[in-house]
Image (cartoon, rainbow, N blue to C red; front, top):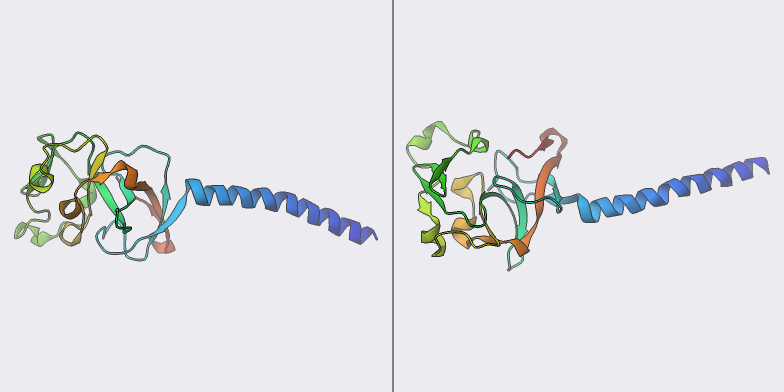
Length: 184
């Protein structure tokens, strides 16, 4: 009888811990830290095909953040924010210019090859050529993949409206050998 009472007491104690833990896990998983698979090679050297990342929805978007967004056709992409609302964006001779100021992109160092001098890593363009606008609208972001030569990004589908952004990628958690915080 005493053993049964101890077992019931332990079982109730276990449930008191388990139920709040499951609720907390559900809230974290569903609303705060959301797992997202990486599909494709447009973010190579930063993210690889098959990586699992954690995305969050609550912090503001800054230049060079990696975001997850959904296109109106339902396709989900992971790209790096290059241009913010109100920015004029252009590339000239592999140099990023935001509002006519040269901007460094240190996260691309691993991607640039020795042979990139024979062909540009990022082709020349300006925002007006791509979108017929001189600056990005108030609710839009210009995004590029880190693997510029193989990326379908704002150069092909235009700026990403804020309403389509699902969140910011924070870190890779799987496979374990790829574990890292995503650099800005």
